[in-house]
Length: 562
Image (tube, rainbow, N blue to C red; front, side, top):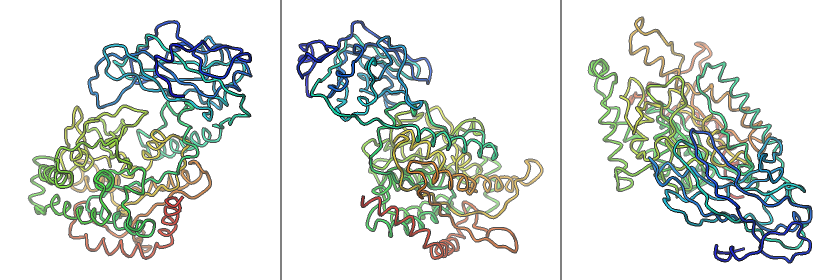
């Protein structure tokens, strides 16, 4: 079916019942104008028009549908790069009143047709996707149901206005039994995962945890069944110890995909702090692991310049940070300029096949709000807080470890190191995968790589212990990412799509001493003197964990070959 609006206007109205009518194209015409505005971050929708109540024979003769709408929006947006938040949806309604969307297993039977015309001051025609005879909507229709159109808007200030519209309906020979999708098992697994995460985080006294958004209860988010399984990578924070995660990743890549870059293997890479910086380098700048190791070590030696303990103490007293943040900022700017040709290159890159996000934390709300996501892509389920963020700003923000560097102001936010809330970003990565790819999309590999298990460290009280001791204690607690690993190890393998098969791998260096009941000291985030020793520790870990690495590499290589 390929038609223009001029042709659509000549089609006959859809006959119901249709038994005495020929195969061909028919229309259902809207009889009134419609509009819908949004006042908050919840999706607001309004029923517009629908087909007549469908009988069994007409349902069997449905071969395709397509919406045409004469429409506009409010004509402006405060931040156009944050996306278009008005659109049309096609759904299955219980009857022609449009009062009730039909549901199956708690999932609303509605799908996006197309976005509204963006930043438009006048009306014009737009058309949606073609729902062909293989689309699941037709298998979910029952006699008496109707196919309805609704207008949707989200976030304050957004408005959708429709002046006239047509639903083009193609009738053809009767088709056999249609495929009826099942949502129950997936919905159960998502609910089970979220319940376990919430309970575990309550035990860890985490103030804010990731949770699925409202869009996951719509049928359109379940249409990814049958698509290629995903491969995702999560990188912990840890300062100069980030080199360890790169050495481990390099070993995995050489076994799983020789000659390929991580951006060619992983669909999404997430990182916090040091992991955020390497995520940007690997995913957004498209470096090989060898290139990333070389560049990361050079940056580390520039950023963590040895000022000496006295100078650092004076600097902390004056600025609250041990290091000169301008050196960090300038190093990032220059590096991005060298790699892209433009120091002010934006993080957002919708054409990139590998999606990257890093996290930072609002300085004014680090205990009761989720982290701020800085993305190289648009998340269809949520508004990006900083869509115009530059690459260097993202790297600077996610690396702004308290007591090491001062916060950075980006747009309306003052940001610090995302490690305060999610030094192991795996939980937020899982939530983001649901938002972007849908809950039905299988994931073959969740690979989470740490930067070393730190030795036990006491968190003292301000005013009682030395300020440096307090900062180091907090650093040790926020960078001990094993709690997140313990939480997700069982959950992802048991409940993510393709339940029961292994899909989660965690690799993290650590040497445990039974006599002291403690782990070997791996050095502070800025301890350049321990790089060589930690490199040796990582090499030993790689040698001792070949079975683990081979298992992950085998899963990745099999996925790539599929």
